[in-house]
Length: 311
Image (cartoon, rainbow, N blue to C red; front, side, top):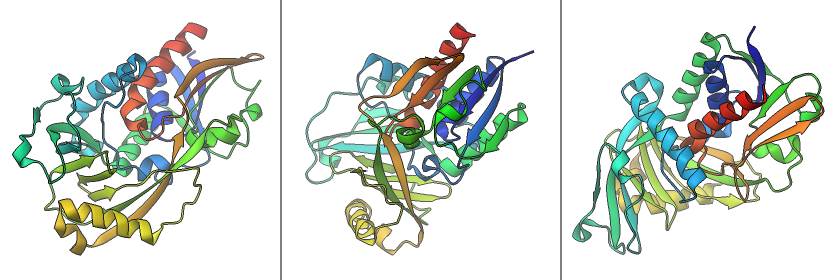
């Protein structure tokens, strides 16, 4: 008989954890209030990118990259390899992951947009999140996983009923795990129909990006701490379009497919650790802010290692 685990949350963190647990021989049930595509993960203008220099973060990101690159060979996976131009106001050192990408080169200064002094061209995975999440759901259920849609007000509702709980509720951890250090980072993006745009663009200094996907081009962005509103803000749309049009003027006339809003799970650091309550072991895996896609598979691997130590 297989070992059993309950994963709480069905976003990119929960699904990655659930799949890796299955592969390690666990029988897994996911419990989630919301299911794809009605999740923050499905709204994200998701791209793999190796932010940060902390060894643990880098390890998680590196393992995720190793997982995503083979997926780019299957377009049905929702993981696409796209060339992205990243620019910087000030000179920067080459990132740690430059030799791990299929293509990477520094942009000559005369080819940079006005006002920028450094930049890179690189091929990185861009994730078409609605397709990707559905693929993960199908992968999970076809391997025998079960999904139960119900809302939890607290993890206490599961204590004593299950031996192992993997908690991946994102911003919901503020209430479900009573973690007051969790807060929303509100994001808003625009999806446009612009198949002629094939190269991505990133400018972290102004939080401006264009990510071409098969289902449209994602324009962004914004990050508003402690804003819980899920209503699109027309003024933010104008601001995003104005910034993106400076890079690609054609976005102004492109048809808007949708305006999407989501709440990234902010926290001072990712919480990936074990908590023991009576006879129930909880592995917390939340607080990934805007880099859940980048860290998901690396964190999932650590979840399995922790689960195997305690079962």
